[in-house]
Image (cartoon, rainbow, N blue to C red; front, side, top):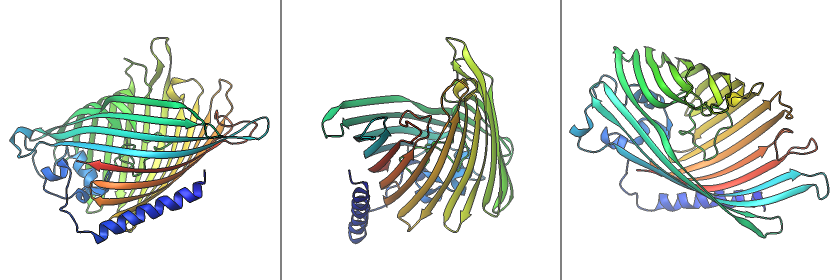
Amino acid sequence: MNTRKNIVTGLLALLGFGLVHILAPTPAEAIPAFARANKVPCTTCHVQFPKLNEFGMAFKQNGYRMQGQMGTPVWLRDNLPLAALTRLTVESTETSIPLETPPGNKTAITDAKRRGLEFFSAGHLAPRISYFFDYAFTTDTIDVFAPGGGSLGTTTVSQAGPGGTFLVFSDLVPNNLVNLRVGDMSNEFLYLSQPRRTTQHAYLAPVSVGHVGVELNGHKGLGEHSGLRYAAGYGNNGEANAEGILGGGYAWGTWDIAGQTLGARYSTGRAGDAATGLTDQYSMLDLNTNLRLGQSWLVLAWFSQDNVDGVTGATQKNLLGELVYPVTSQLLFTGRYETKESETLAGATPGTDTATVIGLSYYIMPNINLTTEFVAMNYGEGHPNSALGNPGKDTIFAFGFQVGL
């Protein structure tokens, strides 16, 4: 597979589609249900859908209310605050695995069609009580080919489940100083989020961590472009928690000054297999900064984990740098570089994985975008795709689209 040729072809196709749209008559702007309910465009809350801007972060933490406004119960509104998000991605992957015998590399080509459908709703039950509900379904159909081109079969993977359901009780202390969330939610920074990333390829770092329980959060503004934001939660914390084991907690805080943000978070909890009793207390500490450089956003972050997934002695450290730059009002560039350093005392070889992600998204409308993406993954010694001290490598080229309704 000629990866460079595919990249050039994809970029030209995206550019050509954009030119056709620019030259064609502009249709009436369609905006998702959340924006329509408040009679504002999507870009009021988003840098570009789905990444939040400062206003969107405040709107979310205010219990989906404009500053100073009370919530209107959903049954009294003119429209139902129900939204849907669908995406489709076609990927081409080249995998290189060092072997002990010639030819020294094993290459497989995978064409993957990833389809996703997500329904969510957010609204108000009372002036200071709001809700959020999310349910997602995804299907990945993967055709695997041998180096000579012969098919090795087709694999279909389906996943379904709630992506979060919670209630928000706002203004326990007035002016958004103390709010309460109860339910299934994400422990994450509002500006650094797995579901609100601007690339198809997920983060290597534990950016978003699941949490079932309660959370207190709030915001104290110190000026037009500065303030303090915080959250603290208790319950069952983490994606790999032992079922039914409570005792997980977290706290994070951010300090905004002159449009720049510094953040820190600490999480801990029990993880592992509750049935076998093989669980251990894990912990995570991360530090980050979210810089506003003109119209661009630059995020730099560091993560450190102990006893990852409840495995005693397993450690992991991540570094993350991501630049999101609106080239035009319709064309968004995302560049990201990550490292993941893993080690365990159970005998596995430590190793460092790296990921380079370059993506372009063209927004036909604020809620409809085409994407093209290039990903280079390099695996360290401890990864199954590496051998003889030589790193394995994945080169991924993807096209897709995303529609929010």
